[in-house]
Image (tube, rainbow, N blue to C red):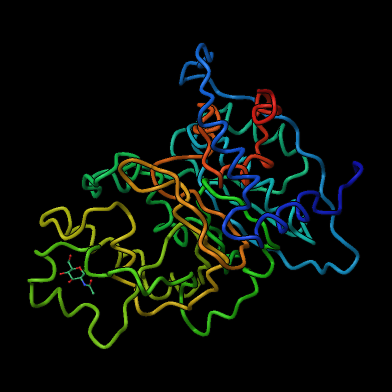
Length: 355
Ligand SMILES: *[C@@H]1O[C@H](CO)[C@@H](O)[C@H](O)[C@H]1NC(C)=O
């Protein structure tokens, strides 16, 4: 066994930054000085270039770890690989029992370099890979307001229970544009209280606007949430009871709404609204610390957004902007400085310091 790092290296730094909310002046000031310092002549690699990554250290279990597996599911896509790498590193680095975490990666297009990059970056990682047949959703995807939301891999989260082997009974599904800054075991062990899905709920968001007038004006559809108090939840971080999902045939339920959407426009976003239609008002509410989302900005422009006050266990760059793109452009948002310590991209070691 290789020498192990058992202490979460960045934990101290991060909790310091995180508990001072809004983002401390020093970080904000650094951010603005960078955003004013755009350099010309940045060498942009062609988009087909696959980045290579530094090797992550081995992280080992502490003494009191049992052997319960924590199953984490993510998608693998060359365009998001830098995000995936950072997410994986954050999870094992912040975990007291990193060797108990097993990853399940879903890919849609076979890209051998993606897999070899994962293997060389995380030689000690325990993971399985699965092919997702994109034809399964291709005919069911209707155009949304942002092209990235229409990628077939975005819909994998609907089919997890059908594809994962039967020994996997619960999973945490995670998007690739996030980092986990708390111990993922705390999320894994939540009691779902008989619900099929656990996620933070956002009841202050105006739920009406996730669906069109056409939807609400249809007397049958409008009754969908009767007797429930539906709230928005983000499908980028979910705890799923896989067995219950299979038994309740939830895949079919979500697909049924996608079929409706194909003929009548009942919503504008991608894979989120059909999830809301089936499950909103009937999920286990998880503490908001597990999805501090929206750091990518809105869906159209991706402007900087600040963190909401409160404890943080997971930072999520949902929205149009991504931290690795803004860092490469030398225009990071202040929250992007919390992503940067997990960036394993080989050329970015000094990207925040070298100017
Ligand atoms: C929510 O949005 C709908 C549709 O845009 C609007 O008609 C309604 O007044 C809003 N409700 C609240 C409480 O803001």
